[in-house]
Length: 488
Image (cartoon, rainbow, N blue to C red; front, side, top):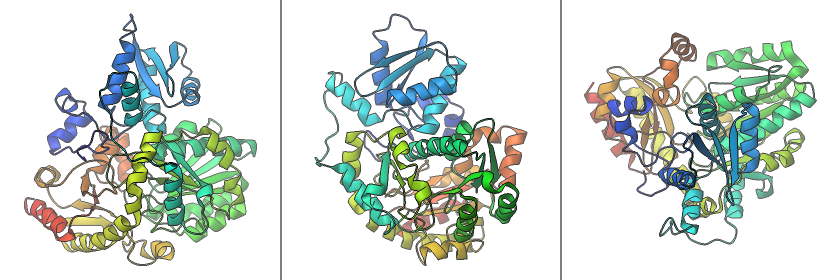
């Protein structure tokens, strides 16, 4: 979804499909032309790889496509890969490693977590230019689509951010990866070695922090709202050794909101960075740029509300000298969006504010329904009682965004199969989505004792569902949920 060649969402309608996807069942994979980018290789990228491989007499290599030479070299160095081939193709770089090797698995994971791969539109464009495709997507022309996108996003952040303070990346994951790599290098030079992860964050944020932290560095994770009170003790113990705090406001998927002013004060005393990602409710709702040193945002959500373009941004507020020190170096590392992705984003970003305003109203109504239903257990949203005051301080009233997570009291599989709604990763689209979050983000953890224990400690139930309300009538969304709840 949508019914466009570059859709970023694919629905897994039944529980059997969900498990088949995670277990890489050919019956499921063969029916998918695309999926959430970085997780699933798009059919146009596969077509381009087959074309490039067709000129190779040897069949011993797996090929991966990077958006630039620099990120390709980063991957080779990080995993100490010895046997490989690099080729430049005019706008992107391909890396070949031994087929089926551990190196191939490592590079695939690297591309997923860092977002350094080419986009489906870049693959389409290259195939079109070399005569392997008869036509490509039709897009409206715009002399400076990047500027249009930056203006809208800067306005959402508020007066602390202008369009010149915004960097655009090929995805939200790449934006964070580029910044965190810069921040790690800077903190090492300053003798800082402790990073704090505040809240259970998005999968790739966790993975990137683990990927880039060196042997001499330590990541302290406070996974749940109940743990946030320990932050002061950690600062007291480590002081100037703390490089920074990385958090989402609110977090994904439990929508926990910390007391940002207190975190800001602790960071300032230790000269530590405060990195905030307000993607879950959007920077238009969660006004954090007055407190953050850097603001990370996935524009795939809300800004790309039609569900067919990946992009991310970094905002460096004027009030933070600490953050702005890292602007130039980060700009040299980030993978800029492909031009045709920028053109597509520019076509739809004009609807950004109106879409958020609509989902704010809808989610309030849907969240109230979920909280009152006897077959629904815990409900997590921006204004949940546990952190209502913390979120209101930054967002005010009636600005919850589009997401609520909830647990059901009953058979998960029965509910999932009955629910007549798209079931996919992502959120912030015009069409409503229900995501089986733990199955899609942390399926491997469900398969081990240690993983299940870690999820339990973070209070992440395997049956957690993350609902993203779209532009449909909220009463229709509620009736659809009611129907599935009646089945359990």
